[in-house]
Image (cartoon, rainbow, N blue to C red; front, side, top):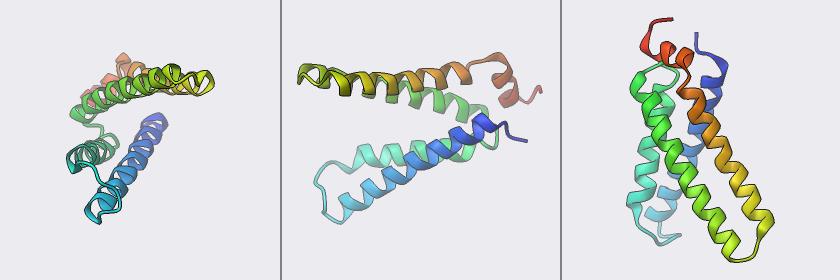
Length: 121
């Protein structure tokens, strides 16, 4: 049985995959103009993690940690731009969002969670 935090994390990655797929669709249809590679990379990463986490694959746990690090850094960069543009409330909100990614990283690195993915529990 999959623990409920991992199920919710898989659901969050399903939302990320959906947003990335919508972005790829808009790029391919010419609605927005930007490189397809970044959206496609997020689509592949989020879909892979979304499928691997409920199967309790260790590679999916490592990919989720790596993507959470990337998302936290991206969110902090966004907060920095909000600070530079003198929007402190938005910057504080973005910083709290980065904190959620740090909590996800800490959860996935716990020994009990690691044991789930290694198959020793």
